[in-house]
Length: 342
Image 1: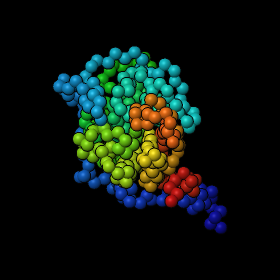
Image 2: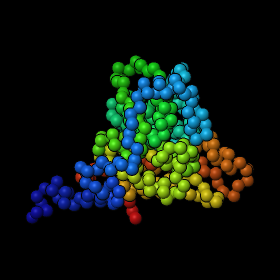
Image 3: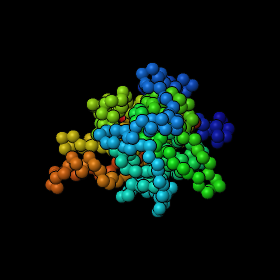
Image 4: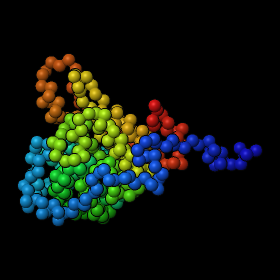
């Protein structure tokens, strides 16, 4: 008789909750999920005035081995792409990386602004909060300002945050009645310990981590720089900590977009992206999308593999993984094929 008391009660008995992630921060109770941060650099707010003072004393910063100018006046011709329609399929290709607003390609390894634009428009509404905790030159932050989303940008490298503040230093007053100037906060900090970001406060994470040590962004000058780690195993262990922090700060039901690429060693393929995906599934995320993003004008591939006759294929794609944080009340059975399977 008990099975006939109503469809809601019967459904609740049949639902299998999501299994708890094991290890690291993900195993703690929800109310205690803020990590112990003693080993990580605490987040330090960098305001516009801080940038102005810094730019008066520095004409440029050095990222990897390249000088990136800061402090010059931006002459913005366009505040959005001339031709744009949201992506609808799982293969993305941007032969022209995008140069509207203050987007320029002189910061090694930064992602095309078309990527955060697509993620922001699909997965958020105006005034919602976006997090990029490996913000680099601030591409995501600029797109959030243009699209009216609040944003927190974090980077372990103080020089990167100065570049991001420089890219945000432009006048923008659109005529749209629905536009509200968003709050864009920038911090020097560690993606593994976001001490200023509250539990379940973020509507979207859109970030582009280093691909292990393919590009050494700080040349080991900054403690905690993931691109300075020597082994892939070390890198993956730290990416798991980042995945745990993503799980902590993201609201249930919302999305986390990570762009990651692969490499070769001894002429054999090293699937960094798939192993990073596993770390995020280990942390309890479910995989919403695996988007293949085609690469154009890749400096490393062009310089390292110059020969026209190679006995392997040049890597010409990256993976944009869209993870979702399922609510505890959701039925695990519905998503088990998109979750951790090992």
